[in-house]
Length: 130
Image (cartoon, rainbow, N blue to C red):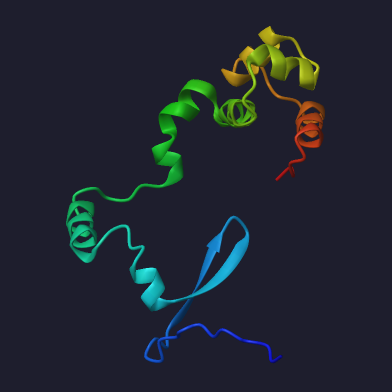
C-alpha cells in the first residue's frame, strides 16, 4: 500500500512573503493571505495623515507634563508599576515593606523614593533599574 500525500495549493504569483510578530512568535505569511486581514484601508490612512498636519507631534516630556507636575516623574513611575501589577496602595505597600501613607506620599512626590526602596521594587517585580 502506498502512502497518499496531500499537497497544499500554492499561488505561484504570490512572491512577497512578510514576517509578522505576535507575542514573541514570528510567522511568515504571503501577501495574499495578509490582504484578507487588512484592518484599515488606504483612504483611512490618507485621512489620518491630513488630520495629523493639524496636530504637531510633541515629546513624551510635553505629553506627560501635567502628570509629572502632579505626581513627579518618580511618583508617576511608582504608581504605574503598582497599577501594572493590579495592586491597591495597601497591597503594594505591604509587598515593598512601607506603610500605605508613605507610598501615597511617594506617588504624589511629597516623599522621596530612596535607592534601597528602588532596588527592593526592582527585585520584587523582576525589573531592571535604569
